[in-house]
Image (cartoon, rainbow, N blue to C red; front, top):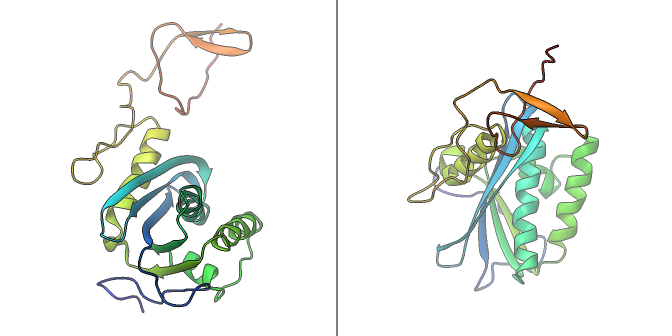
Length: 205
């Protein structure tokens, strides 16, 4: 069972025990409706616990598990891209953690590709571990994931963490706009919408 105070069942497929210096990535992903509007959030800290990066992305209409894997991959890609060779991942998805450990098999075809990508990135590290925590111990990553979903859905979002603004465009108050089609694209005549806003088109004669 996962502990209330920290990670459990850390997995170190390469390199034995933890090195002197490694990054810690708190990762979360979610989907509203499962499947539904989805996103991930990742908070990366250095050895001293100082936050060095906050990653998030809206993923469109996906499942919770898809979003969780994308968060893990984002953390791994950050470590590899920036030349770090040791990474500990903390996730509140027990399924993802057990699949990466090899305890559970990956049966979903879409997740198999993501699982393979994660393993490919892990192989580029000298040391890697992954552990499960309860959602309450992964709050900032959860807030980042929700902010990404809010942004993608065109909603206003709350601030993330202490003093960190959620980088989301406030949703417009007006819900009905006039537009015209030019070159196969709809151009609004009386307003603007943030990128990623989902709309329904009703044709008026």
